[in-house]
Length: 313
Image (cartoon, helix red, strand yellow):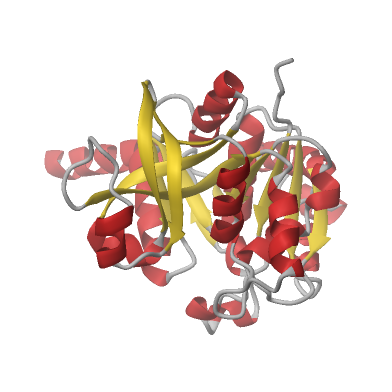
């Protein structure tokens, strides 16, 4: 029987220390960006819209109790007073209606203590149940290079193979300290899909050269996580084992450790995504994300029109 993915988990529980002091008042996943359609939205809405457009029906946001009210305040329709003030702006009314629909699809769960990314994912276990699910990072913006968005590309690989699959991107070894890295054996071309042979969190260049080379990639190039996964529910058993055994790295439960454990227990694939991921958890990533969205959307056309008009003057 073909399993469909209808649930997504988005992690948004980090403290955002690299964006201090802005995160004193605003959770980083709520930082505003001008999206490809020219509408200013918080990052979390852009990510949630990607999931829903890919076919997801229910979304779980993992966050901290202290900031959940910030998310709830955003995902709601206009108040009567606000609606009256925006009555002549049909695009705003349409956005309000969209937010009301998104509110109905969103569930919140809490990470009470900052015990790591893997620990945050584990908090969604009851929401997920016994189904496969899409995992996205609340501080990553995904921009596709094709008509299908990045989440849809990944879901189609899962639908074909019916096993856990993580999105990856070819990455130079100079950036390995930023990403989990995978060694793989290619099994398909469209999209490039690999059997995962080993996973390692933020390896050194020396370790990667010895253990994480993937045949067919250029020298100094590796498969690194894109920040998007479709997991079978057994990932929660792996996380539970790590927590039970207090298998921590730098005091935290790491998702990559659970992924490697899952890989030893069942088939695990990774596939290359046609697109970019921007980590808005760091200042330069926030700037890059805005540039990437602008170049991919209506802002690009507006800028070209303005430049053309200026040249005519």
